[in-house]
Length: 116
Image 1 (cartoon, rainbow, N blue to C red):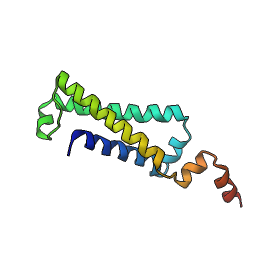
Image 2 (cartoon, rainbow, N blue to C red):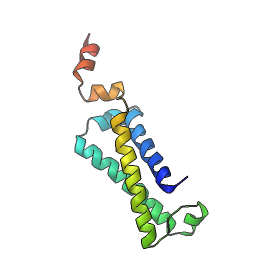
Image 3 (spheres, rainbow, N blue to C red):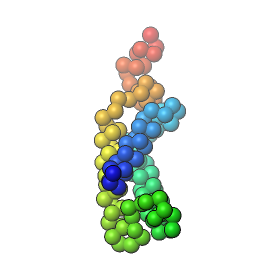
């Protein structure tokens, strides 16, 4: 399994968590679209920075991180981050919205059903 594949899986899991965890999904759905995208990218960058920081310690080698604490590791990290971001956004756009998300967004079809 490659680092890019692992990061893509992490991006997918993050997207699914914000789409389907009760409470979190409704709060996230109420945000502006641009803020949602930036939030996801920020979380992915935070995780990537943590992985790079871990690679700079003796624990990075112990857990088998494919990163090194140098310029080459930074390039690998950038590739990993791009894979995670692509997978994250693709998953978010392809997965169906939970009912709580549709209600939070004010979907007219759901509001009509709820009122009836």
